[in-house]
Length: 37
Image (cartoon, rainbow, N blue to C red; front, top):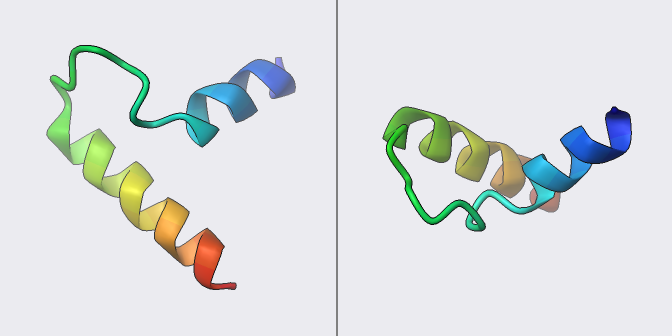
């Protein structure tokens, strides 16, 4: 399960339908914070 979650989080741009823009922005900010550390 952890591997599946990791894949879904590491590829936030993969989904063809970005219906939840809030979720997309949160994931994007999370990726930026993780990258800056």
